[in-house]
Image (cartoon, rainbow, N blue to C red; front, side):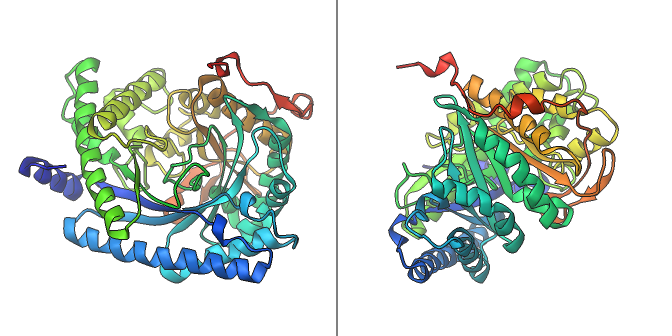
Length: 452
């Protein structure tokens, strides 16, 4: 792949003035061959595998930062879903013990987050899956860097409502064990979870992947916002083209870094995830792009249409630039991590119902949303079910990261710290769907699943 001098200079400008960066490089690692019925040997195998490759990842990523001058913000690892690798361990504390080893290995070498503590339970749960779900409150309150996921629904399989019921209660317990409920920020519930997603909290190294793969997540909301600002007078067709060309440039730069890093690590290059991911930096906001398009506040009428235009242009630009686009690829709309989203909540422009509508066209779903700590577990389960239904019916990935903040009510302010940001607690409907949710069972897959 060759790059022109003009492309190089444009990348330098994006980096210097518009917060362009490589949001994450995530090394996927297969841990199935680390399994041993002796838990101590199993833990030793996992530690050596993760710390050894983690150290290489840090070293090589830092070399590329120096070489190209493009910041790589997060260095992460994803592993085989832990529920799959603990089945041979009869010790009741095996899930948490493995998590603590993952946490220590990551911390010792400087890996920011490690994902994969989770299970695929869209059609049912094994005993190992149930043990892992039961361990989530203890795991998330006793580790710092381990991220967890559960895939409880898919377009092909429908939705496992028994798992959804359990997770409502689990989230309440996680929140009660961690300050401001922040442990919930490291746990995401999915429908149609992608196996090559480099972003946390939902990254895991899927069973269809090779022993290792290097996936890269790029981001550039500041860059996109800048070009939208410079094109205030163009119509929406022209605006889409501007965003598409910008995403093309961002993706080209990201793939250059990803392929070279994979080569230096001697592992296969996986995918480029072209998602626009907000940060707490001023100007690094997806909602800010929508507002720059002409919507007064995110959540106002027109927000869903503007977001749909944005995500379509991002996907088209990325697909033009690379044959290895994957993961989630689109836009994230986390509330606490996006300053403009947070402001929209504060002034009342954005409700959880409007957020749900926005997720019909965005990459992920209800992300980093603080809700009152006294919200009923069945209501939390119902919110999860609502959001995942959008993914199931539409054949897309949707996820939920809800944080029931202990002691907080609607309108209260909460600061989660660092990259997790700050936000206001959102109001939740006081009407109950308890009798519906507690029916349990499995929601059948939609007719669109019958494609063979």
